[in-house]
Length: 271
Image 1: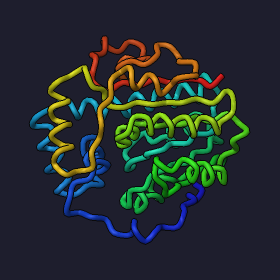
Image 2: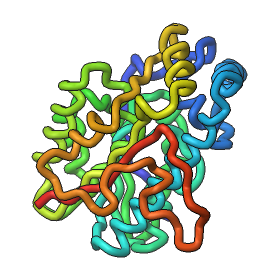
Image 3: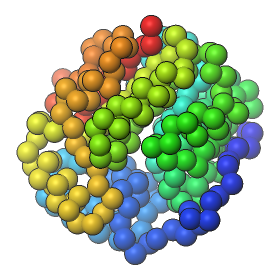
């Protein structure tokens, strides 16, 4: 296995604050991961007490990502991935799915959470044929993301941009759209955009739980309507079935009819 590449750790990211819950660690807890602290488990349990369905949303989101990547590698022939807002490693990470199908795949992960940086070596071991790298950068700084990612990825070749449950952390909708556009503008024709995020207008109990979480002092996550999520794909060609509940995006053959949950996403190709 090849070693990962990481950017130097900025001083402001050296300390992991275990006194307050963090969304990435709570998400890891809901996914069944171990990289979290009691404060995160308490916050996660308090959330599930109001809305138990959040565990289904978290795990369905990860399954959606796995099916997206499988399509991108097996059907679209993509061999480069830029995964922004990586989160903490659990199972079926982007490089694991992609390199299982195409060992030569190259993946760049982007996050600015100190705990993700701490676990970067665990997250990033690559196949011999391919490569992985980690960029310590914020989603709101697309220019830096692109500059650093270009050290591992060849942006003259089609690349898949993955934005999984990260745009909800950008409070301003217009700014979120601008970030998506800036990143996709840098990618050539034949590239793909994968987005999934929590959706508003589907489940009022979910919205109540999320609003309470946002008001608790934790790092907020903003739910958006399905129409708002869909507009992130403006100018691109959506892959069937379009923007849908993540459970309904190309479910596994023979799987039971999936329920609609308040997490929507899609995959689109740049013409």
